[in-house]
Length: 567
Image 1 (cartoon, rainbow, N blue to C red):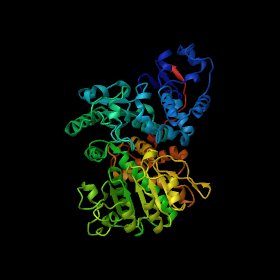
Image 2: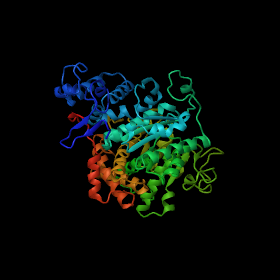
Image 3: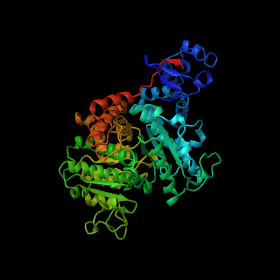
Image 4: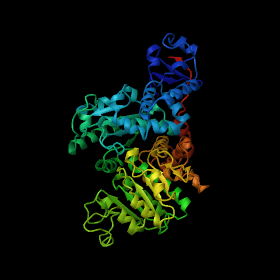
């Protein structure tokens, strides 16, 4: 706990040396109009606050009324960011009260515009900007005393923000948004969360030429200079917080996988784009299988993956492991996948990374698929392979063409189609398009929020296959178990726990995923499952399950006001 605010030995109260203007201007400790009269006396707050003494419930209602009247999602996003920098307890209480309504405003899809326009709304420091010109000051920057109690970090370099590409310093909106969900859905105290942006420049000319851009005005550092900078950062994190969790977020595909591979055995770390996306996609596919009745290991299950970078490979790897658990050999499982990248179907004749080569199709197998000298595109794959599942992580809006989807629907009674790219304009197809092209038969999971499609005059709920179902609980389990490393079985345990909460386990007509209103409770359950797996993997510092449950209870924060006493 911050040295300025300490829990007292007695009831749930906190001791602080702050008072007056400093107290009400601390977002972590501010109560606004909810400071009671005795605390206004004690901390010299009379005159700084209006005379009305309210409650947290009053404040939530008042803020909800304001948000409802704001015209656009972006203005609501900016309002909520200002609230977070003014009163954290109120901000998180507001999120938790109506997570289904608030999550699209603080995270996808609105956070995409928030990153693009980050320089317009930046007001107060939140997290840390570690810029390349300050490469010799990384230890100094991370040494600030206010970060002594950090337990988890989300870091981005802003190069691949959602499907929007390079946003430079504006990419800070993603670590801030992820950390907000760590707290709202994983119960992790905001004091333990630190968003970080590695500012290594940007190749986005619109940002470089924008007079209000707040980042380093320089083209991206690459190659050895980039690697040395990232390594200096990682080594400093290891020394400063040897037991902290480091989550990589929205790094370009050329860096995401290799950085995870380089550092996953050096410290406690994971990449949500690779591992979190895989976990939620796997759980959602199992939910769809509950509806179709065709088991994952059945020979009829063939999966086309459009976009075979780090996220696509992560999804494929995890699904292949689930197939092997159900009796398939490694090669049999790999043969069920048809990866499609920028040059069409991935084949052995292409210049591939080792992790891509494992799923490449042989040229002999697909010899008759190609039309002339053209690449083997999605339509070709659908016609010849007849996939039952179509997953998109390409970042290319419209990548699922009408012709390909209609062709898929000829061979599959209930096509399972997941356009997972975000924000909305980068989605491979909209739910309404997919329902129109499949005569309302598609089972759909999207990577971002969409209006419900209309089928035969009725609105149909579509599951948002959002990583927020996974990463907050994953982080809680890692922190509570005091895990030294993040293992593949821990990621799998998160997916398996989400499977236990699938509505389709009981009702085939239900949504593929639970309502987001249940995500906080699910996060806690995932935390327990991940912590148990960490113990089994020999990576936990807690001794047993009873100790783990104590740590989860101790680390699960509720945003409520508590009494203050003067230190």
